[in-house]
Image 1 (tube, rainbow over the protein chains, first blue to last red):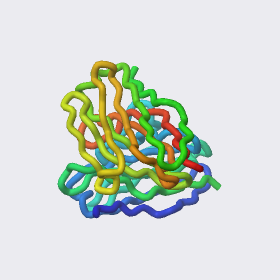
Image 2 (cartoon, chains in turn brown, blue):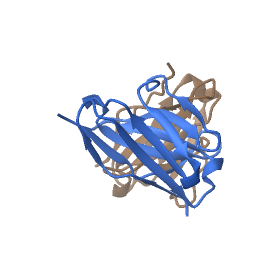
Image 3 (cartoon, each protein chain N blue to C red):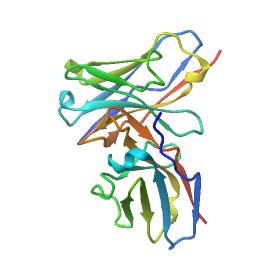
Length: 108
Length: 118
């Protein structure tokens, strides 16, 4: 089955930059999407089609892609950015969604 | 304003059946796929499957095929997820989400917590 691999955790000091990677073979063919989930809340889309930011999402959130790896970058991290982040894409056939295992971002 | 409003928390016993709902407002419900996502306690997001209320066509994740049934009633803009016989391992938060362009899940419901315990 198709998988997306993320690091379990990332720690960052306020004002610094956090980078979260997501790797998977189909990422070279399919777009990636990133969701932020805070405790007790539903996920919220923060990046779509690898690099696009929905309206209302702060500019400090950005996405990039290279081969089979995509990266979510949060610059000038704030305490409110502490959350779980999930990447999501589709399998190579384009018929099924898949989520990464999630990365917990801790703001020190 | 696009909204997905899910039914309330459920507490069930093993072996019981259950149907939870997801009502869409603020968009043409029959033009979008609606997906279901499971999140077990303290765990990550798992894609269960997706339904197109206008057809209705369904695609299940292999992990959930045969375990749940997705359906929709387009007359009331509502999608459903149901179980015939719950198990303790079905205890989780269940989210519905609208599929936008490509594979984006652009709007999410607030989640329905299902607890299965004897």
